[in-house]
Image (cartoon, rainbow, N blue to C red):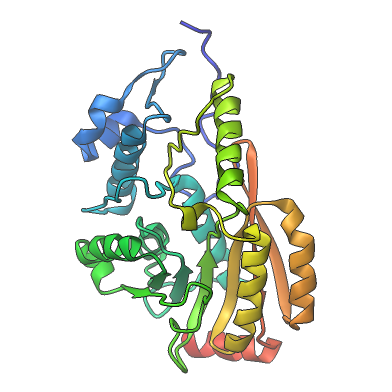
Length: 318
């Protein structure tokens, strides 16, 4: 057995309100979801863990986390679809809550607060967390038919989601808001986890690098332990092009949404993104950094509302 690594009790880099700041308590998780039990075993340091290179183990862990922390009765995803790392997804939600709060005393809660999740995916993960933690309602959009069917099934089979989440198919692959937001329909925020690679080759290269870093040896074939379809992992022009297109289109919906947001995986994407936001006359732009493990992630937020319009919006809706 290897010498035991000291682990801090609390993962201080995660958001203070995150339910995932403490290390996984596998006894409690197995109690919530017994199907996790076969995948839990002592690692080389003697600590209970799961094999994160085994997609079935990762899926079972996610089911247990969602059941225990977010009271989800049913959750599953089709084979080879993206299986999201939940703590990082929760951080995006908690930081959006802080963004909505601004300098007000309290975070706006309840199903009057509505978010649009662009690319909701098969997992429906952001609506699950946002609804449980803050009572928000959601529109989830996606271009992929299988993802839509899966997300709808999750929404239908969880009573709390059924009345608070609406899944809509985006028929036009290049659109973000057109065809999803109805005329005069308002949302308090949008969120998106863009495909950040520019090609399938780039996506595989990044996966191989990640595996090499984790396992310490060269891998010849990428095993995507979190899965992912092409449209989830890469897009022509990568995330920079994707976010640029989203910003240009968001301008047409500037009075229908308070905060537009998108995750930005690569720091180099920020500079050109700021230039585009300046070009479209965004009235306020924020970059919110989030730490997860050794990795720093971030999302960018922008609005087209004037200060007065922001005040009026909050008074009317929150």
